[in-house]
Length: 241
Ligand code: PXP
Image 1 (tube, rainbow, N blue to C red):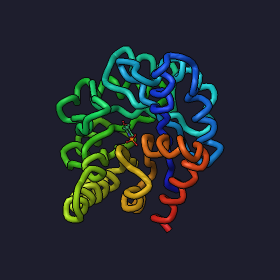
Image 2 (cartoon, helix red, strand yellow):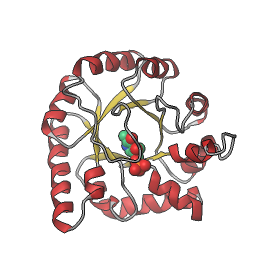
Image 3 (cartoon, rainbow, N blue to C red):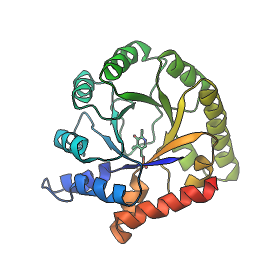
Image 4 (cartoon, protein in one colour):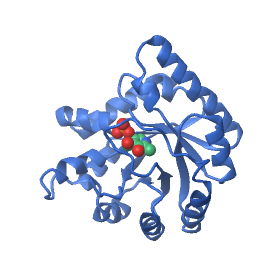
């Protein structure tokens, strides 16, 4: 069954705007799980812009589904991940600015450093995913690195303007997904997905996990997290029916 991982980073962004304790991403995680989320995703950035080390530690204790930690190839954060042991670690590009649409992790160019970090995570019993662009060379690198999963970056699809551009990006995602599944990798996708564009991605054969944050947190401001999660689950389920 297709899983929804709710990324709660931007609940922490709101908290950090005042540097206090509210709103607590730990509460957001519990509300998302109660509404049917299959997992909670957080990105502990090197600059600690939103999620803090305390959030990772507390969520490790409280999350009842799956905790997916997005992390850069930073030795300190990899060591922290190995210690705290989220269920899954998803490697993302270093110094990725949230406000820009950048590509996925270059698993080809970073193969040596990734091999070391992946080994460290696996030794700690953590499943490993690589957040990559939908390109065959990147899929091959993920296979060689013995990642458990790939998360395809859907940013280019989400940003595409016009029917042809959207179809072109969707085709790239479908083809890369086919290659990943054939190679035995678990299939995930995320970035820029929302209530309008999630359907075709949810419908990609063998898709197992979508990680969605900004759209859900944005809607939650108006309807609450539970309702925002349920509506996203409905949009996903309508596409796979
Ligand atoms: N997947 C990964 C690897 C991410 O880094 C992020 C956050 O940027 C997301 C999914 C969620 O993206 P969004 O907030 O656009 O839904």
